[in-house]
Image 1 (cartoon, rainbow, N blue to C red):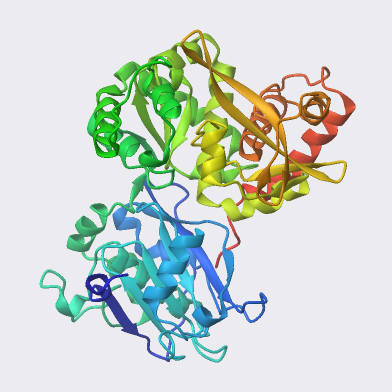
Image 2: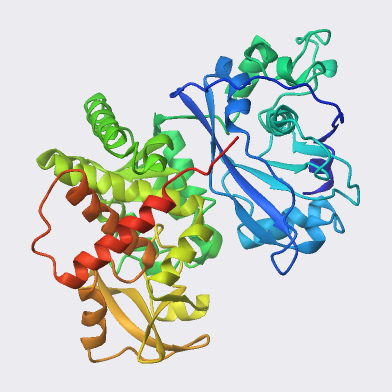
Length: 512
């Protein structure tokens, strides 16, 4: 946060008295969603977590006028004692959170941080970034804010600032003599549907945090998404071969040598490749996503409840391979053609890509699951990745995972190699000692053994891809009732293990 942003932070001191309110069920389905990433600050050793609350039912009561549902991702515990205790300022906390991924990179995701003090103040309070995507909440000591309605109010109120709403007393369009989410009054009435004024609804609907459940990007939006993807590696860090591959150029096509000229050239090409879905495309994708939602809502609700956002590129982009950028699934005419030839394949691939979006939203939870499958985190320098010409995969953005085999770590990575002026993918296993990557193994036995345990044919070089392919296979077996008798005993055991893992990973947290 720079000084101009600090000035936009809104401070709300909370009353210590509360009025109880009856719980009402939130609507099962609203057209728009708000994705909230809860981050719970604790001490460096993981103890003394800040008091926190995820008030979905109560918060949902005030937002029906905005046709908006709160979707809380599973909370993350951040071991940062000075931040929890308010011993460092908010600017520093935000800077640290951006650096380690605790604060969501995407402006379409709100990060809700629970702390025990703000700037040294331990009294209950909240601070929300006006029109931004970050807010801090301190619920105070256990004897404070005992009423769920009071806890719900502070969360809904501070996120309201992120949605662009200001205090009612400063808003000429909003009466300040009646209960309002951004004003005074009993908590029960401030959280009721009447707690939002029609003008506030218009304001929040303009917020980039408000996401429609199904959305198809136009050319302009798609070009901006590809050129300014905030989740992925900056374009100026990619190798020339990766740029050529993504642009659909031959392996020998010259690129501008000057960095700025090359960046401008690539962005121009990306923009030219941006496309739009036809009405037939939209109708077909709507049908497929609805079917996936129906099949997964009970078992994997995160698949069904999080939004489906699509962007379209020309078929030469990344050789027409479906993948994700930010919260969007990228498809091409070539992919749509293949989908229409096999609906079951279409459903499997769309589910696969949706999981990549979820992995991007909650990487820390998947990291824990991956370690249970035998992966270890490693550090590979950008220089090494460039030297070995590792392919940039937006769905598996960094070669930072290795497998343990015979008491040594092996980095599985895919390189781009030229083949008659075209590109091909070559997957290899590299011994790695700390950050030093050795020569690739010439004997593929180890790699073959590793691949054989999974019920999938490709994508073994990164756990993101292993998980997505495995979920697709599990979907076909469990939801489409396809046989799995061709799998080995080990592969069936892996699929059974994955079933239990996904049952936990793809649930929303228990909320008030």
